[in-house]
Amino acid sequence: MPNSMKPKILVTKHLYPEAIDFLRERVEVEYHDSDEGYPPDELLDHLRDKLGVVSQLTDKFPAAVMGALPNLKVISNVAVGFDNIDIPAATARKILVTNTPEVLTDTTADFAFTLLLATARRVVEGDAYLRSGQWRQWRIDLLCGYDAHHRTLGLVGLGRIGQAVARRARGFSMRILYYDAISAPSHVERELGLEFVSLDTLLAESDFVSLHVPLLPETRHLIGAEQLARMKKTAILVNTSRGPVVDEAALAAALASGQIAGAGLDVYEREPEVDPGLLGLHNAVLAPHIASASIDTRTKMCLMAAENVVSALEGRRPPNLVNAELWPQA
Ligand code: DGY
Image (cartoon, rainbow, N blue to C red; front, top):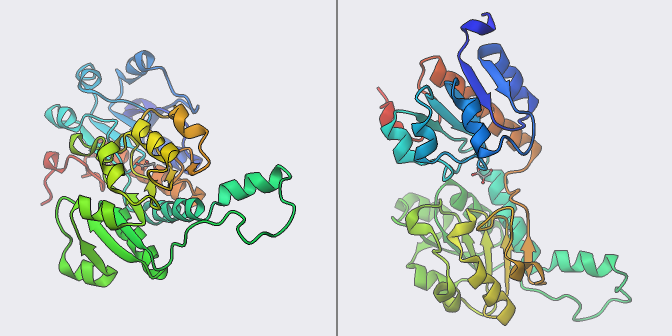
């Protein structure tokens, strides 16, 4: 089909090339092949004549932006999270929103466990210690940390990723508590050996607390000073969900004062800024939002987003529709 007859889309930032090839065969693509993307005011200009956009979590779509884009039919986000998009506003304007679930579940769960173990066993401190030439001899108490095996893990949120973390924890013979808005079906609890508890019980009894909730008004600062104070002094907090789920300043203070033992973080309240209080702490392992960053998974996410936008523009129900009420299944 000549380009002039194809629907036009914008790809806001660099994607894996397989996805760009897929898109170029099917739609007319304006591709901003950079990591920064357009500044927000320019982004709007580039979107005015587009029917679709392949966006990333750093692109913001508040109601005002969507209101200025009467041609826009679909926002295909290359992420499972979609807190960068005002979903009720999109739905009100009949803009389809899609995401990339499932392909990143195991990769993200692997990384949550990586942070848990790296923090508990002081891997990053050990690396710095060795490289700086401080290692002189084996010592009985050198960089001793905490065991993960046979300890208690508290999962806050038991969606796909929370469950995948539970599967890993079973291999470490951990007791697994979870808290969520509703309890899981009993066959899931049985299969994964889970105990449903209140958030307060989970915080008080867990040696590791791992967060797996979406960012919603109800989950913003779900973990603040009060919740950190309920945790054990030997406990470790892991966050691979969204930064604002944790009050970052309160967390920095809790780590500095020894209120809790450590934190393994992949996400932050004001990315890419990180609370300066966290940066100097030896008991925080800090990753730059890379939990889903394996080459395979990121490639799959890009392809999935490409398929989502093309389906919508070809008149088919996109496989990963977030605002499903816009296209009820037959
Ligand atoms: C997501 O998908 O929401 C992650 O934060 C990036 O993979």
